[in-house]
Image 1 (cartoon, rainbow, N blue to C red):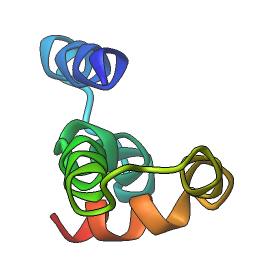
Image 2: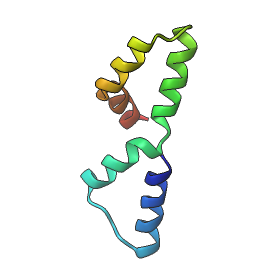
Image 3: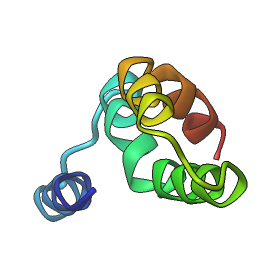
Image 4: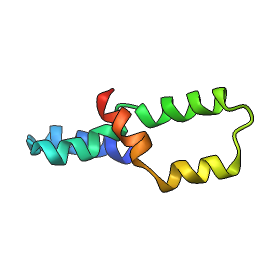
Length: 70
């Protein structure tokens, strides 16, 4: 997440205007959607199993798509 904030700061300081696709590839991380969703999952699925966490890592779109909506 830190890298996405740094990239946005570089864009801002240089006056660079990214294209929509480039911005969205970075923005889905910087909106903190992944952090919120993973915390919500671990609170609901108590205890969170290793298998379930590996599934989330393998299928990243489960986290990415709701983060884009955020």
